[in-house]
Image (tube, rainbow, N blue to C red; front, side, top):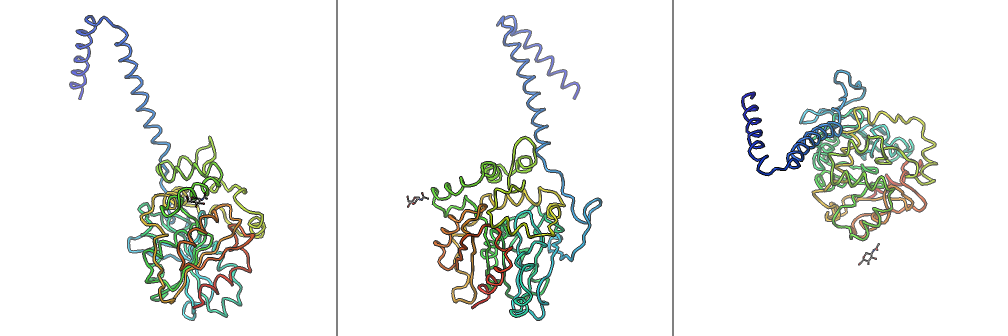
Length: 372
Ligand SMILES: *[C@@H]1O[C@H](CO)[C@@H](O)[C@H](O)[C@H]1NC(C)=O
């Protein structure tokens, strides 16, 4: 090493020595030095930049120093754990077995559809609902290799390990609603029916006319337009973008109230037992940022190309959406409903994004889904 180094130096100084007098140009010598200094500076900064954009490793539940595991969990085939929570009647007597998929920055504890469903309806219909922490949230292990397909297969494994039978229902809210499309794509044969509540849309799904998705995109707050561009085009920057203190990253992560309609705020004020830290307790990267990167990244399929999973009416697929939703533009939901005529589309006048918190709504949502 040392010998090689000194050889290089002497070769360089030899060149400088022979060239110098010939060109008689101290300026090029000087710019050579400053280029080197610049290069060192640049490389040094790159290393520094690389370090600060790296997310710290997740504080996995049950690992030394990590949060404790307090809930029931299943172990998936690849060794990861999924934590779950059961609601409603016991699954042995249940007529309708449902997997609930929670939204962004949320967890199995925020299964509004089950926690706000009246006891009378649960018992009258015989509803069992299992909610679970999506990978990286709450007490479920992070899944750095997570894909749209792996998520649908996690849902299937959860249902199988809990013995929900050959067919079950899925209900997803918000980003969980967006992920419900993956169940319709990858495990349609396992579904008895599906409900998407205020499902998030990906502005880059190619089925949208570009003028329409552009218009909807610009209805978002400016910081969110940027946070989603980062998630889509530069997912490796998502951690830094949403944690640095120089400017606002995603306003959804920052929990800006501007994202909610007056009706939303009314419902949210009535919620009491929210533990804001639980969903993100293993770290924000494997929960929030990976969610953005996957939800708004390039999808390997377009929901608008899906075929009706129930051609003989053996089940049904429902979308519910508020026309005052400030997080997910109703404009695009209407377009999806128009394209997919087999979807039962329920638009709720005067409702925002959080309508599943309305105690009166959930009975109607469940009844519509299980009606044959
Ligand atoms: C987008 O373009 C189509 C056809 O060019 C037009 O019919 C439609 O009204 C436009 N939509 C919007 C939101 O501008």
